[in-house]
Length: 297
Image (tube, rainbow, N blue to C red; front, side):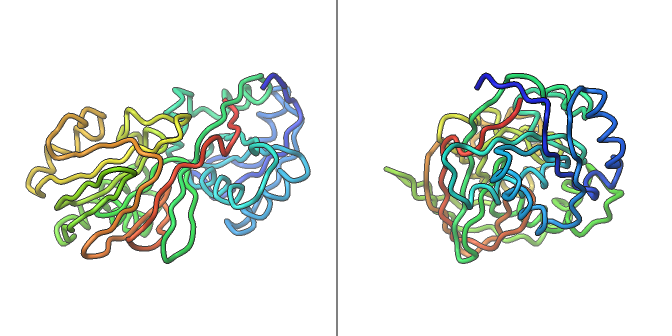
């Protein structure tokens, strides 16, 4: 793409980042960055999903101000619709983590992100899709089944002031009683069978406040980075720091594949989360949707 935009519709999540950014501050930054924008504060996730579709339908593009959850909600809503070309989306990071931007090496600074709105840089990115008894859920960053999903569920119930420590605390709380499972991942030509604690499905590289869980994930290869984790619980004090740093892929306790589609079954059933939102339980079907979103970088 070669267009440069100075006029953007901006949808603002006032709850992102514990409200550290106001709509007025965002408006002031946009004006200072030479962007003509009407900032609309959207009061709920359901309304945000409706508005992103309405705005893209009429304007062809949307900028969302919030965190990874806001971006994921946006992508999920847009991918449920039919478009003649990929919907154009920009992210203005005002949330707590904004891990998705780390994959691009982009600063998670709101002012610098505003300056990118008027550039000519776009990137057509793949999106992941989960399907199960719950229906369909599109995700842009990382999905999990197993102890990581259980940790995400617990983290979501912790006070917001805990901030970046929420996932780690949720992990510690759920790990002792979380059941291992017999996991079968059926790929295009082969299967992985393992006694495991977690399955990670990554479209991008970072999650859980800069954990580099999938350093080889690629947003444009129409594949998802699949990792099946099999360590003993007693190994986890040594395992987790390696996952955080992204130096775990050669370890014996992880099996990794890069597949376009596959099915995951576990015995017993495990909880499943997508981009931090609980969606249901295994079994699930997983696939990559190529070039589904035209992302502003």
